[in-house]
Image (cartoon, rainbow, N blue to C red; front, side, top):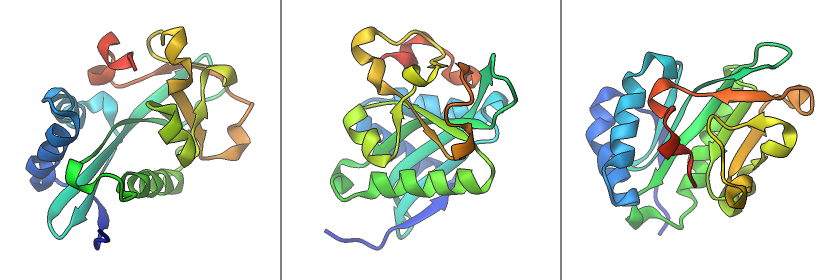
Length: 182
């Protein structure tokens, strides 16, 4: 079903609809609690919170929060994508991909150089991500070898490709080992 979808930055009034999408997509309150905590977490700022909406109703949601890279030769502007959620009734329509593209475009315009994600390689590689560990980017917590390809990066500034590496640090609310298991 083709819908008119508007991708826009969220506001506080969108939070109940965003929470409903997260609960529906993930089948639990864990991601809803994480998003609520990240939106209030000063160490996650600046963040980019986007919803794909049909009218006023969110169908999908994506959050990018601030990340940093230690042991790098210079300061770098980085973000972590977590989470991406699409309501079950809207899955399979390309809405998640549109949210990713919209978020990456906005981040690039703001000068973000690298975006990291821990997710399904088959999905995220279709959107320009590639395994981060072979490029020298270490996840905030160890990723089991069987899931190593799930830790991915996308360079929004191609001049950083191959020139930077280091340990990625995330917002305090995301800095828990249970969030780093695929």
